[in-house]
Amino acid sequence: TRLLEEANQDADHEGFCDTEMGKNKITRTKLSEDIDALSASIDEGKATILKLAEEIAMLTKEVEELEKAMGEATTMRNAEKATNKETVDDAKAGQTAVAAATAVLKDFYEKASTATGFIQLSKTQNDPRAFGLKTGVKMGTDEWDSLANPNFKGSVETGTEVHVDTGHKEGMQTFGEEETGKQDEAKFGVLALMEIIQSDFASLQSDTESAEAAAAEAYERFMVEANKNKSMKLKKTEMDEADKISAEAKLQTDTADSKATQDELLAADRYYEKLVPQCIDQGQTFEERTGARKAEIDSLKEALKLLQSEDIATSSL
Image (cartoon, rainbow, N blue to C red; front, side, top):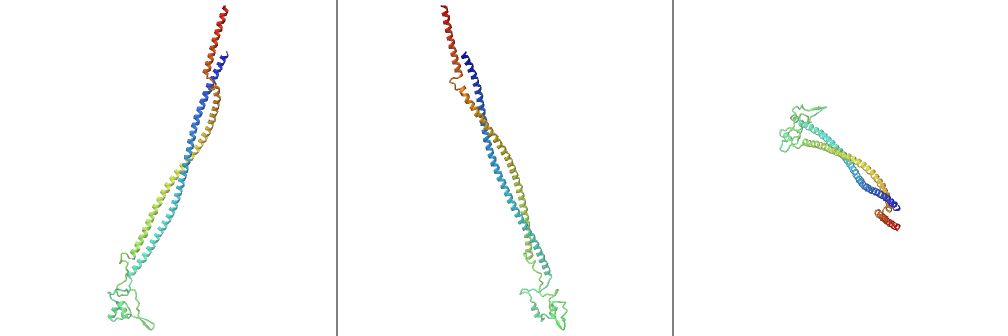
């Protein structure tokens, strides 16, 4: 009876140990796997956060550089625009001044072409004084003046004295050729030079206006592209910051879960340590103890048979 009770108790204990040890092993294995997965997720989260932080810093720097370049381009464009405007204004003013000067010169030469006057000729030309000596006509006399002016009316009386009008008047004849100016005598005369200056001012205005238009177009293209790049970088920065916030939140959750899981594994390990003395460190295994009890029972059965045999022999005597 005692051995049977022990056998029953041992069997119950063995069932308990098998159940608890099995459950504990499954629990510890799962918790270890969870911790490994959480650790990998934590490492990945840290790497993601670091990468996003570096990318955000790089994008922020690029945006700052873009803004600086845009500011410098705007400053240069404004200065260039002001310089070009001043150049165009100067060129227009120059053209106006040259046109005015040309008009004055043309007017002068037109009048000069109809005006009369004495001119100094070369030595090969006739000298009016020589004409007077040959003819016996004295300069300043009425005869001299009549030769110079067919319409000469004679002396003019003033008071009691007679004065001879010896002044040169418009329409008088002259000795020699008329002075009509030299504006058409040379290719590079004064008017030709004025035309060249006028053309230079016009070319300067045209070239400056063309350069201004090209510079303004290039500036607009640069600003459009720069603003486009800036918007893209700002949008990417915004997305990275949102991803970084999510990654930080997940890292925080994974870290908390990892700590809780480690606590659970620690508790499972402690429970396993309590099961070991009860279920493993007993000197004999369940099979060994069962075999020992079976051997003991068999021995008792043999002894009982022997006793019963002796009792039968004694009673027969």
